Every structure is written in C-alpha cells, then in structure tokens.
Image (cartoon, rainbow over all chains, first blue to last red; front, side):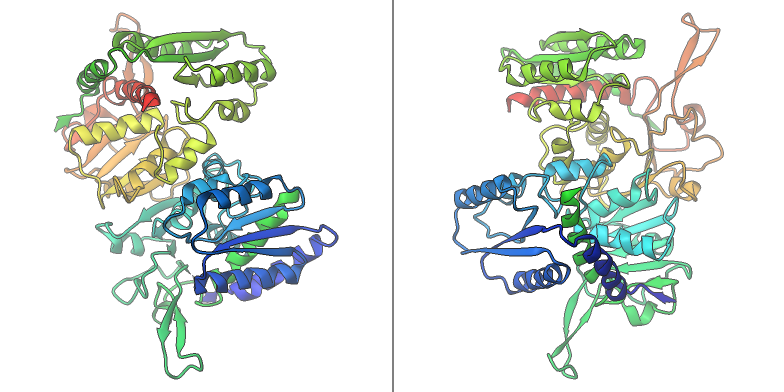
Length: 282
Length: 282
C-alpha cells in the first residue's frame, strides 16, 4: 500500500509555484461574513499559504447582519479593481443572504473558487481556467502518483455541488481523465456493489467512517477520503483526533493507494486554490 | 414489455401546451448558418411544431462564409429585441466560427437550448429554468410513464456535452431524480457489467446497434435509445429505414420498457424545446 501524501506533495508543488510567482505581485481577497470559527480556521490556513508563496492576502470581514446590497456593492468594487487578481466568498453565508446572487456577482475571471454558474458551465464544456479546489486537488494527487483513470471504474460517494458533482464532471471528461464515473448518494440501492467494483473510490459524504469493514474493496484500488471529522480523544493534547469518511486503519492494507486523514486531500485543496489564483495572470 | 411511445405522448403534451399558450404571442428565432441538409430537416420539424401550437417562428439564414462579427451583432440585436422570446443557433457551425463565443453571446434568458455556460452551470446547481432538449425530453418520458429513478442504477453510454453529460447531471440531482448514474464512453473497460446492472440504460453513443445480442439486460430494465441511423433498405419507398443504438428487435421482449426508433426520444426532444420556449414568459 502506498500512502497518498498530500502534505509532502503540496509542499513540493507550493515551492515550485512560489518560484513561478516571483515578481508577479498577485493579490487575493477573501470575504468573510460573520464569525464562524471553522471558516476562520480555513481562512487562516489559506492566508498562511498565500503569504508563504508571496501572494498578497486581504481579508475583508463583514458582520453577520450585512445586507445583500452592501455585499453586492463590495463585490462590484472588487470586480473593477485591477489590482485584485482573485477573490473568494467564504461559505456558508448567513441565511438572509442570497448566496446564488452573491456568488454569481463575482467576475468569472476572478472566481478562483470556480463557483459562478458560468465557470461551472465551462467545466462541463472543458474550457475552464479554474477548477473547484477540492476536486482539482484530488486530480492533482492522482496525476502526481501516476494513477490511471482512463476507462477505469471511479465511484464517488457524495453529490455536493462543490465536491462530488464537479469532481464527477472532471474525472468523466473524455478529453482528459476519461474515467467511467458512478456518482452515488444516500439513496443508492446497491452501494456495496459500486464500492467493490471501484478502481478508484472517492468518498465525500461527510459521514464518519461511512466506509468500514462492512465493505470490500479491490486490492488494486485507490481510496480517496475527503471527509474530516473531530473525534473526541482524551489521549490527545487538544482532546480530539481527526478521522475521515473511510476507516483508514481497516483499509490501509487492503488497497493499493490510500489518502490519510489528515494530510491527504486537505493540503492538496489549499494548493489547488493557490494554483487557481496563479492562473488569473495567464 | 411496454413501448415508450414518444409520438403519442409528445402529441398529447403539445396539445396541452397549445392550450396554455393561447394569446401568449411567443416568438422563437432559429439561426441557421450554411446549407447542411440535416440541419434544415431538424429546423423544418421545429418550425412545423411551433406553428402547430401557435409560436411565431422566424428562421434567420446566413451564408457559410459569414464572419464571427456579423453573427455576434445579429445575436446582440436578438438579445435586445423584447419581441423575441427564445433563440437557438443550429449546430454545427462552420469551422471558422468560434462556436463557444457565439453560443455564449446569447442572453441566457433567451437560450432555450440551454447551451450557454451560465445555463449549464445552473443545471449543476439545480436552479435552471431551461434544460437541454434531448435530456429534458428523456426525463419527461420517464416522468410520464412513472418510471422511478431514485437510487436506481442508471447507465448512460455517451458523454456528449448536449446529451450524455447534462443528462447525467439531471438524473443524478439529489433533489429531483436522485439516480445513481454511471457515465460510460468508448474507453469504459467493463461496459458489459454496467449494462447488465442497469435499471435504466440510456444509449447516446451514436453507434448503430452498439447494444446488441452480445449484451444482457435486466428483465425489469428500461431501455432508452437516443441514436438514429439511416440503414439502406430497398424494401422501403425512400430507400432506407431508421434504427437506433440499441437492437430494438432483439431487446423488445427482454426488458420492461423500451423506446422505439423512430418515435421514442426524437419527438420528445422537439416537445422539450417548445416547453423551454414556453418558459421564457414565466
């Protein structure tokens, strides 16, 4: 079994990207509405990596009760500001905010999260410059470990609009990965079969250890785990450990490749976002 | 076995639509570049159905050597003309025309083929008003025959951007059809397995009788054939007969539901386009 080491790979790739960005003076804006602690953690992580490779990072924070109009005006300013290369609007937004309207207000050329309808459409048509960060990170992980996808059975469990569904489009695309993708959800009647037949199994269901000893996988399979869950653990200094949607300990010697949690998909996602930002000057 | 009678169903639905459109004064523009005979046949068919149900049909014909700029200006005029409700640009366009640019120039609110990046993106996000005509026609056929999709294995063979791929998005969507969709292409290694396991098999590969006696299907399966091929036949007055991607004669008694060719998906596609046009006033 080979562990797909997202920590190591992302560091290596970030270093290469840093060298490519010398003197490029990129500026990236992150919009945060409210005080969600998880969002703040994600943003701090992005900020740190941006600073590491020389991308100027600007955090714009707004109170929870901001109006749609003020947010729209702010995005319009960002769209018109030639000094800003890329922008993301951290999700989730408060309930009174029209997320579709806000996300689609951003100029698609600055939409480094690849969330606008236009950029998602380009994804299907294979003319996209940006890709949603988690799917993109996963494809880069497969690329760098030379894991073949063409014609292979790829089972994806989880249909979110930012991970499972765009990932299915990316890996299915006949001009690039050309995988035979099956997209499963909680309604899937014969999930067991789709898991057992998978050459590549990607789990992004957000359910702790959804894939456990109930299931068998091919010995030659690649297992990719997008889930991340805090499991209370009194033996740890911070009181918890991180685990994924796949029972890593059970499967690590039953497949050919597997991502650890943490240190698998997570760091590749951050790298993928930064790679998108770098493409704003292409 | 029940034949999925697209001729009968589309006539019934068109009649209902006609009644809904009385006094609505809809105008639909079709842009044709060049002299492709197949395109002319398709357009005449659309025209006839529009006239039948009271939609004003305008055909704008342009020579093969038209420039991108003239075409763009014409589309801009259409976008600004409040009297035009919907418009399609008949594909294929000549090689010197930038199809992506032209298709995306059309205002998404008039894009009744659902070809702009924005409308395709809305499809993934489940906020679409229009749907690509062939996928939409297929879902309406399934709806009207009460064929359940939730959790079922749906195997689609063929990944085109106007049929297979958007159909996968539609049938996969967790909030509506919630099928477990597998999208296959010519690279798929174990096509046989995906065919045998399908509850619903949809073939849009454009290969005559791709699905023949080499393959088995479930007795309870639904077979949907998007293919249409002219097969030379001296016993016919016009010298040919029409057949699909599925060997209908072989499978008609081996499944639960099957579309004939012609008279299955084809007429539903035209109805679906007209339904999209009717939604321009919603």
